[in-house]
Length: 361
Image 1 (cartoon, rainbow, N blue to C red):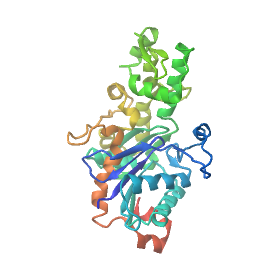
Image 2 (image 1 turned 45 degrees about the vertical axis):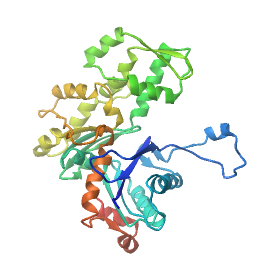
Image 3 (image 1 turned 90 degrees about the vertical axis):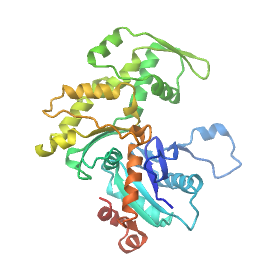
Image 4 (image 1 turned 180 degrees about the vertical axis):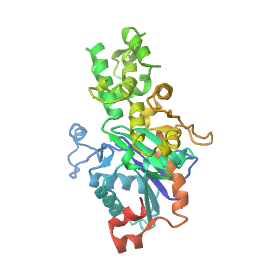
């Protein structure tokens, strides 16, 4: 049986058996609803308000909920049998706290009785997905953005940085913008999320963005409840916020300049191999026009060596930008488990949870 690869995000959990040229077989929301212990409490309205978020800004926070979620994924979704559990590889966010790593490996061995465990950082895995072991990743997730540099398969934490901004913040921005021009329309966050995925895009450059703000053709969209909403230049504001964070009220450089500044902290001899192997990943990076705008900004960046994007191999599955960490995990699982580089139950029993820092680094 192939190992299972799991990439747990704030919004989505991606899992499946390690088949590198296929997308994850199971992609489900991470957010959950907590059901009452007393089955006589069947008031559905009361259930809607009991929302549980096991993952907050990329890190697991509710371990009981995560155990329930993984149980559903592994036994119901992927067909594991109790008493015959297999091996598992987790994709880890940048700079995951040691305590979180230890609690995860403890959960997997003590609650799920797995036969083997491995974990690797998402940045490393995203590079593996495009055939690189060194380079930079710009990962824009639902609730955080990671810029990481990787040399020979190891994250250089001194030149990597995590930002508490992600797709959710852009959704909230879009909601505000839509509310200004559609004051009489009641929008839920889920409505705005769907509208963002359908309409949000990046302008060619800052000058084009200013033109769109002065005048842009409007489109009408009918919501499921029959309300009609108009969408104009605000669709470009979502993408522009990544290049002009002041739109979000942040005093920070745009995404390309942030990348260049991160890389400037490593030895100059590594700048070229890092910047010329840049990978965009995360759902937000799939936004229409984002890649072109990124490349245009890179061409005029302050760096002597311009960031250059790596194209995914043609044989890789579609939507690799969103699934690169999972696909890279599937590639790595085909190496670490057959070659016995993983953490075994014997390793865990002998050394305890801290063994993860020596075996998975």
